Length: 280
Image 1 (cartoon, rainbow, N blue to C red):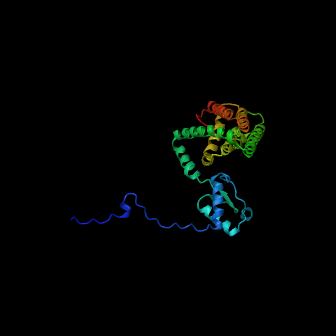
Image 2 (cartoon, helix red, strand yellow):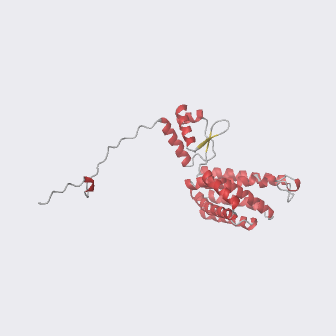
Image 3 (cartoon, helix red, strand yellow):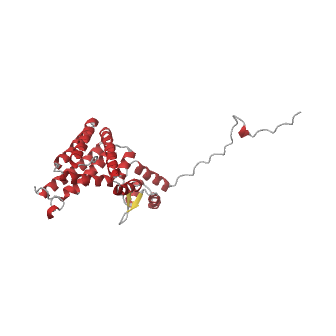
C-alpha cells in the first residue's frame, strides 16, 4: 500500500477560502484633520485659487467654527504639503503647487532652445481654444461677472495708455526718451493675460484651471512679447482689444461656436501681425 500523502495547505487548494484579519475601524478624525480636508478640497477644486489670500486666522476660525489651535495645526500641515505659503506681514497665500514642476523647467528650456518657445505657444492655442468652448457652456453668473471685470480693466488700461501716448506714434515704452503710453506694453498685456486666465477658470475643469495657473508666467511673458511685435508691425491695438469684447460677448451668451470662432480670429490676427506662430 502506498504511503499516505500529506494534506495540501488550504491556501493551495483551488477554491479554498483565504484567512483574513479583522478590519479595525479608523480612529476618529481630529478637528484639525477635518479643517485640513476642507481647505485641501477647496484648493483642489479651485475654490481657493493659486495666489489668493486666506482670511486671517481669527476670521477663518470664526467662519469655520473651530478653535485657532486646531486651525493653526491644519494650516501648518497645508504649508508643509506645499499647498499654501506664508506671506510677508503674516497670513497665507494659496500656492501654485504645479508651477515649479512645470513652468520653471519650461522657462529654462525656452531660454536655451527656440523650438520649445513655438511648442509652448502651440500648446496654449490648443488649451485656450477648448477653454473658451467650455467656458461658454459652463460659465456661471459669477464667472461672467469676473470676466466682465477683467475685460473692463483691460479696456480701461488700454484707453489710459492711448491717452498717455497723446497721439504720438512710436513713443511707446520709452522710445526716443518718451515714456507716454508705456502702459500699452506693460499694464495692458498683463491684464490681457489675466482675461485669458479668467476664461480658463470659467471652464470649471480642475486640471485645466491648475494647468493654466501653472503656465501663467509663460502666458504673461508671451502676451507682452506679442504686444511689442504687434506695435512693431504697425497693427491696430484697438482691434486687438475689441477682439476680447467679442470673445466675452459670446461666452456671456453661452454661444460656444461663436466663442471659438472669435478666439480663432483673435489668434489669426496675432499670427498675422506679430510674426509669432502661435501666441494668444
